[in-house]
Structure formats: structure tokens, C-alpha cells
Length: 338
Image (cartoon, rainbow, N blue to C red; front, side):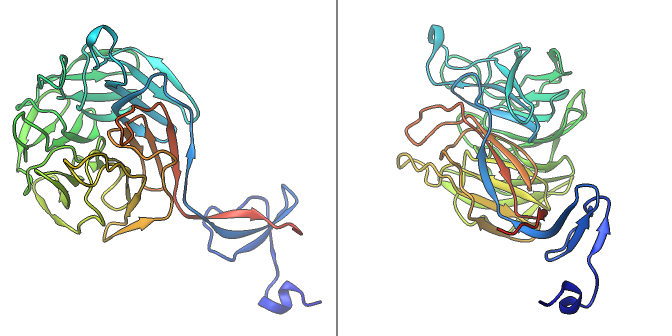
């Protein structure tokens, strides 16, 4: 029988640990575990995570293993009020209730981390308004008032950190907004506007204050138009594969995902389970789909490791379900005889 050395021309390496960088087809012996291993591609997938405590559409911020879900719109209305000030934290497996926001809020921007977060704008009870210009800052245990945004609006998107956020687009009720504002941890400054005024792009954006994506949204009808922000101005970027609004997203301007959402405004439920990927140059459709098609949910994480939680189905039933995304990657697999 031919040996690996005879076929490949070199011996199998003996290593005490798996290599940190892998190329498909690599093979080695892990002397610590006593296993023969090889590098192979693993497919992308959405998998079930822990459920939230209540059915709601909401926003959130963070990474896959440390996400903050804040505010929201409930499936049923206690005391006639659908909006809530609930805050929950996800640790990669389960959600835990945290200190509530000072005000019931929905369709606000959410940025930062589980220990340093920012909620800005949105709408308050009753019903779908009024919009607000207030913001709140979270330090991991309590919320305090932050600086007011210059123009009250809902459906805006924010990316960045608590002390370096850019928030853009939104619904100024009535009308769609192209406004862009930056926050420095104390006050908001008006920046150059989007080329296309829109609202309801995604519940969570992709990027940072100096490198952000605005994906799709509603401009009177659903759109696939994408713009990229460089910290000073917006420029056209390749369009998404589909019209997309009220979806979930995460990542950076070089590696992002956008999932779910709706595709046709004003013509009934068109809720999707589709995942689209951005590599910094072009969009592509991923074969991995959500277990539950939804829109208006929370999105967080990175391009390779995303999170989708809450939201509503096409029949407007709010969800507690959380799903975790794993992108395609090259990983180590133990060689067996089976």
C-alpha cells in the first residue's frame, strides 16, 4: 500500500498543537491528543441558540457570544403599551435580564458592547410614535442620559462604539431621512447626508464610525441600494442581490452579513430567511438560511460569526428565537476510518 510520503513526497509533521493557520488539505499528527488530523472546509449554517424571555421585535449590539438586546415591540400589549424598556444580555448560549432602559423605546439605533452601549432615537408609546431625540448610555449595570441627537427620528441605524458612533437614515414621521450624525460620547454632530434618503435599512449596521455600510432600506418602496461611509462622506457601493429592508446585519465594510428582512414594501408579508454576504467588493447569496424567516429582529456579530434574535414573521408574530451564524471556514478534523 502506498504511503503518504510516497504520494506527497514529504512526511507527516508531528505537532504538539493544531496550527493556527490552515490551508485545505494540510495533514499533521497532534502528539498531545494522539490524533491524525487534516484541514478541511466546513459549510456555513444557522443554528438555534437560547430563546429570549419575551416575544418582541427589537434592536441589539455586540458580538455572537456577548450581545445586548434593548427595548422592543411586544407581541401582545400589557396595559395597552406594546413598546418596552426591557434589556437582555446573551452570553453565547442563554439570555439574562439586565437593568431596563429609562424609557420604553423601539426602532432606535443600538451601538457598542454589553458593558458600554448606546441607544439613540426611536419612538415611544403610544402606538408608532412619537419619535424622540434622546439617547441613553449603558455601563454594564445601569443606564444614564446621553446627548440628544439633532433630529428626532425612528428607524435609524447606528454603528460604532458608545463614544464613537455614526447614526444615519430613519423616519422623521412623515418622510424618510438622509441625515447622518456622529456621537463622541457627549454630543452629536451633523455630517454629510446619504445620497438616498431611506428608513428601515437594518436593525443593526455594519462597520465603525469611520467605515460603515448602509444596506437597502425603504425609500417609498424597498431598495437594494448600498452606500459606504468613510468618516466624512457617503459613496455608492455595489447593490445587494435583492431588495432588503427591516433585516438584520453585522460585520465590517470588508466582511459583513445581511439576513432576513422583507423584500417588497406595501404588498403583504414577504418575510425572508435569506443570507447575503459582503466581502468588501461584491455581494453573494449564501446557501445557509434562517430556521425562522423574520424581519425587525436584532442583529449583531461579525461576518464569520453572526447572531439573529427576536423579530417578527411574515404574519407579524413576534419571536423569541435566537439563531447563530457560522460562515464557511477551514478547520481541523480528526482522521477516522469511517
